[in-house]
Length: 81
Image 1: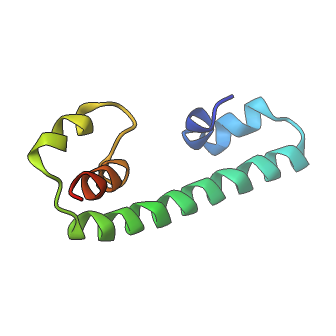
Image 2: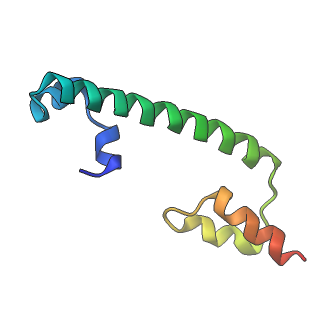
């Protein structure tokens, strides 16, 4: 199971997939940790994004899945020099 799929699991689904109590506890703990870290990442990205100015010629890169402002920003800064 991929991390993306695990993040979407509800408690009832975890119970159905993992009948063992200890395994359920471990999975639920991991899901909570993933969610917390995602919130932290989102906050950091929001701060960075506010400070960035992405040039027009790099805007097309943002349409590629998996490429966001955090990945485009070093390209913009390197190409400016």
